[in-house]
Image 1 (cartoon, helix red, strand yellow):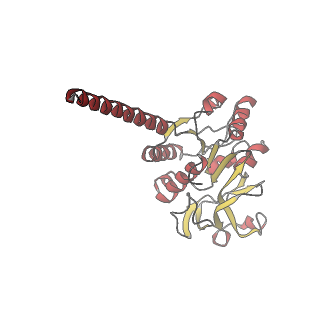
Image 2: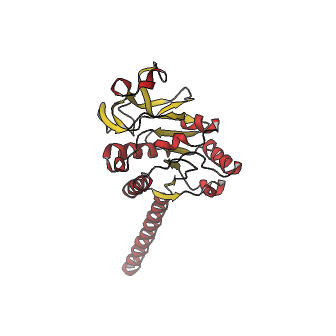
Image 3: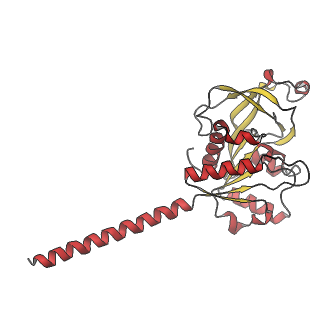
Length: 261
């Protein structure tokens, strides 16, 4: 055998292998870049939470440390079929009241969910689109009211879910305690507020004993081919620097993206 030829052959083989590794590495980076969520912050006329900058910053940080890209918009024009295809989940971050300009934008959201897309709703997202029953059913209910900001006990109803596994079985939390109506059956409840710890004279009227001495505060469910996750927590800007809420939201985003289910 010609030794010089053998060495050359081995060198060529190594070059081919290195090229393949570089190609595979680039493909892996491309796949990682495709993990992308849209954070939507549109508010119609009415109350607008001052927590939005803090919540957006927190979600961007979650993306940076967990390898998914985060786009942010308050423009309903982003709701087109072509644009929504870029995202594994849509995060409605403290949206409120009317958040779409026309029926086509609403239809694009419906097509996205029905094609297997993921939805995450945070805090006042439940007050969005108050005259659209499809949205209530997808999110898991429609905002009714909340008593004054106060501390109360939160009970973890699923200690193994990706959005609650880091939490203790119960904990104290100060927030707006949201009551929703039009809640569909089949919700997988993740967190519930202990009504016995809540100062709210109106609670006997609603919810009464609908859920016993508790009321759901976070849940997820499958809906029309897609996935929807919601949490009522998160009124105060400083909540979003609290690991309890930040990891809770991260788990919700990953679940909505179809991971860790």
